[in-house]
Image (cartoon, one colour):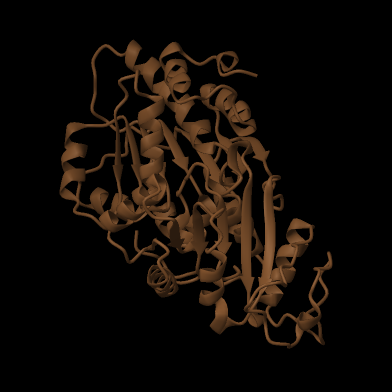
Length: 422
């Protein structure tokens, strides 16, 4: 299947050729015809599957054809794309710019954490596509700067992350401001009960597309597990990063404060690193991401929320400095390497309290994670987690009496995080 066979117009095909796109990904192949038919779409696809192009390309084509047929130009917003983080909003805007470079379709991105005046000025000039985070969108709507009455397409991207970040109520408020007659495209990496309920309430007889199940990990990602003690994790990270084959690494921490501490420790050890999280200014976050993509820094330390939307070509390593307590999050993290047929490596540091999380991850991915026991900071001998469905290989120092997971994790039962600053 080629992009030409999807019925795309010449201006978009030219842009895709410039970007080096030759063959659509599975979600693009399935979703683009649905969107071009102006049908609602419910898509379940994890990060790295090409879903931004799956909705951006056909929307640009629909708007281009409408513009060609229109008797006079208008300044109304016709497409609203709602996304949880500013990084993801910026990435979507960049993609729309690249795909629509020959179409004349205007786009604008708005998000919190920066002065609103430039965004207000952009809205006054008019735009065809608005990419927004929920908080800033509602703020500017309440101030009378945004008119949503003319929306033809509404895209809700990363819906499950909206739930994690506590934005679902804001999303529902936005939906009440939209016209009843519209095309809605709904994208989520996972489908917990609340997200499924939201999808059912806003979609009309949608076409359903599911690619790359959440339990699957990137085929070419090599996974390794290090058992260590909490106090030794930063030393272990510095030790691991002495390996020159780790050209670039995205390191995940659980908290913003933890990200700052890890980045500071790495820089002390002469490993160039920056932290990126919700408390950083937009300029600081963008500068860190730009430096990382350009190779000026070797390590980017991020929280899960801040990392959503980070798209780095040829990322060699993902390192779980802290094991996520939601196994699907592990899958999303390691999927940031090994993209586009490239190889990648995911390393995970596990302290004693995190061993039950490893058990849950192994159950989800249904495969072993090889244990690296030959390193200078092994875990002190202590209790091991319950035997998982797929037995992890453990060193003799890590074997001992089993312990039970005290917190049974369920999608609908896990605590939501506090709403993060966007």
